[in-house]
Length: 70
Image (cartoon, rainbow, N blue to C red; front, side, top):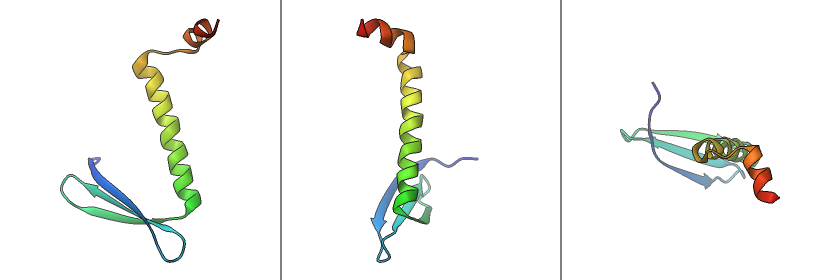
C-alpha cells in the first residue's frame, strides 16, 4: 500500500550529488542519493504528469486551444 508523503527535503552532499529525505505521515523517513541528472529526470517526469493531469482537470483539449488562437 502506498504511503502518504508528508514532507521532503533535498540537500547537496560533499560529492556533488544530492540527498533526498522523504518523510511519510507516520514520521518514517527514507533517504536516497541522487545525481543532478537523476533529479532533472524526476523534475521532467513530474512536470509531464502535472501537465497531463491539468488538461484533464480543466477539461482542456487540443481543439479548444486551436479555437482560442484563431
